[in-house]
View 1: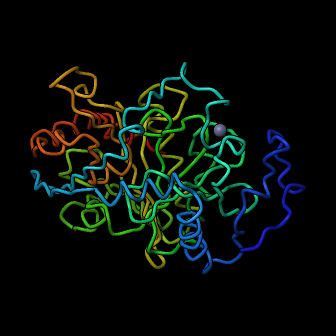
View 2: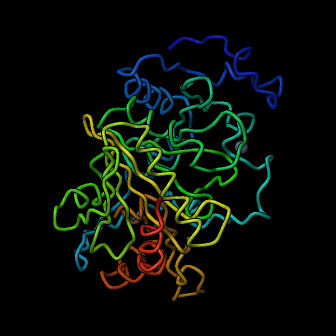
Length: 344
Ligand SMILES: [Zn+2]
């Protein structure tokens, strides 16, 4: 994992002289089989050299989990006090600026380093982990969080990572901690209950099959989830874009509908999970005093691993509360049905 000169190729303009991009690169992705190894090496190295990451993984040792058996699905509650800041972060437009963007290269802490991926992205360690290894896949430039034009990169990343990893995306208004800076997350597979649930035949309602891509609506989750499955990335991208376009028409909006995405490649099959949302945080999040529940659902929470950074919430949340939170933040079923009907 030697240093190399990339600044001439990257042409990153916003960097100050004190933090050239080369100094941020601990490794460069070259071959498919190398990527998970490079990521794990990065984590190992960064845990020794970046104090904040060390601290984050110390917090992670203190997590506790509870299993909830809800009506039709299951959930793991994770008490993770290290996540308090990100769960309560103010992500409104007026509170953000390039200067305060924690994913911009010139704002990264001096000891934070990454893996350069295809000249445009940097893989970084997440200092507030939810999993034993948790990475951020961040664009080198400060550009808006949006999926349509980057779905191809998303799917190729799943190929390069292999089936032991999942790639995650949070829409700018429903879970992204840096809504102005394009980023995905990379986490180990097998951790979110939804991964098993989408494979259960009784839940999979096949809506359509076209060009080798199957589109399922997954039932009995108290959440709206569409699953796209296929072996080829191009028809899958195409189906994804057509569904998103139909959703926009139903919602009568130009911007990206509120969605969270999880994707992976299981041997030769791509699976793309699309959670459709109507709001980011449930009403209980905005209550005061005893009534407040700090829960701020992003893609991991929608996948059935619900993060509670406050201990009393972790202890008191029950099955009914979880079902109603999922229902409250998910898109109305009629809108999903209409979008499926309007899909070209
Ligand atoms: Zn940025």
